[in-house]
Image (cartoon, rainbow, N blue to C red; front, side, top):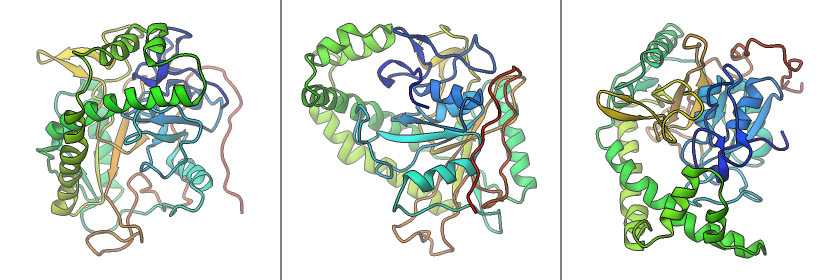
Length: 365
């Protein structure tokens, strides 16, 4: 797709764009499609195209995939070229595709990843396979909880071995490493991008022209002495806290000897457009419940929660550059392709409206 709506400047997860109007969820136009790549998720869900590109710094491919009932893939940073993409955080930014199925994502990835190692599917086979992370099953919306449990049951029936475990250090480390890195780099890299593009404005001028109140507030805030991320805080987050977070993930996979963690992509189904603050749509057990978990890699569509889609997120185990699992076992099994290569991963049912003709990707023989 050539041009689609999104959350303004990719700073949000609702795609309620103050400049162009809200992107809408094809399953319920009164609800958000997720963001920031909400137009991409909506276009694929509405069968306008078999695949669309988005960008992902903190969930901007995975959240629309979940809320629009399609598959999304956040690759490792550097797998795809960032040429032509407006930067937010070079540490975290990546392009990422959304498609009707994981099989289509694999086909598309094989085209745009060029010489990178291609990922392949696998069928569940012996040994621990997927590990539900306890922390991400707490405080879920009842509909999301129902869909999540049904997905675990289906995986078990398909042959996956599920091992329950937790990531006790991850939420705290992620909070300390996430926004300090992204927001500090935003100021530096957007100013550099505007300067190198020859545009007659800097970040302060851009922030003043932003039409979406949530984005304007965030950008204007980080440009004040009170709201700016101090460089020592950024350096500590980048060089100490982030490596500790990566080590916590590595320890989780090594200790439990699994290839992937599985959990609901978002604690909530799609909220109504304009409901609540950006990314926080509901209060449960006395606290604001965010729309997303920050720790996930790829998203698969699950069965509808009533009539609204829900997604399951799969965070894969790291592999070395030769493709061997760190435990020395067989080549890495990509979480999300459990039906196996070329076996026709199931596609999510489309919205109940008369739209464009069915469009699909086909593997060339």
